[in-house]
Length: 310
Image (cartoon, rainbow, N blue to C red; front, side, top):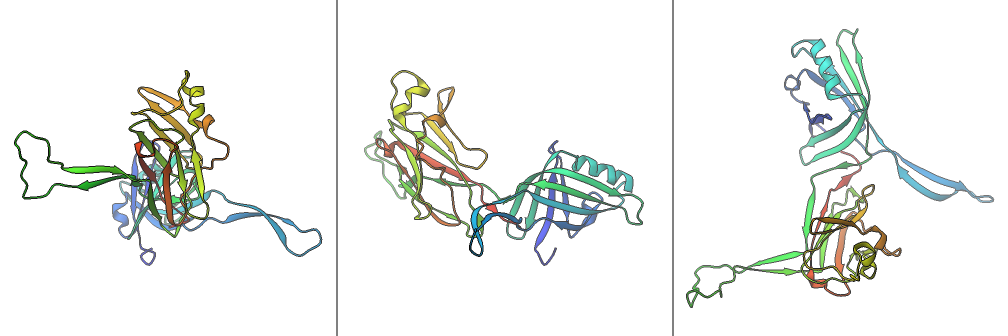
């Protein structure tokens, strides 16, 4: 583990109780000694093909990555007693329970959610141990990253003179909106979605978010001409104070409008020509657009980088 630069593995159970397994100091790991951990590398992909009728080879249909199987083999030491350590493992690794696995390395903190499939103790051996099997999501994640389309320019300098007295001619900073940012998504990561939060400062018609990178050149828009189907009346534009949240993360895809104390579902007014914009390894030129009010949108993107393995 030292060569792999893995420092510790932390397990958080459904009761939000955490067990930190320090690989270099098992005496500080509540009686658990890490013997082996498998399932931290990339998961095997399933490739679906169809054989050609009269030619060699197959036709590629699709591919996917299934769930990850993390197996921890832990030796049991006397904390209070071997039995108490074994019973403690049932609390931290409850069968069918959802747990979060965090892996700390020299450069990053990874985490992944999974469900305990097996917690099997070897009670009658000379050195008692347990083997825990966890079925987890295919990709590890790291700390969330936020990118903003709001540019603040500092105007506050010394020395300064605010004359005449009582006037408001001293400007501390200037806030402007920009329509495009370059998101540098790690090249060793995996495609992921993001959460875009749009705060309207004025009237906005037909807003959209686009990945201008030649491949994939994706665009998602909201058809405000059908906004009356959601809000009623004859509304055809978003108004100042409206907050639009678009989630393009797989398994969480949604589009919602927060107006006052109310929340409205916007999925039905996303055009069929739209696609759920994603981030891809490398540079991503993400831009915002609107038929009217492009400068009246304050936009923030939040995403969690995904990795094939530790």
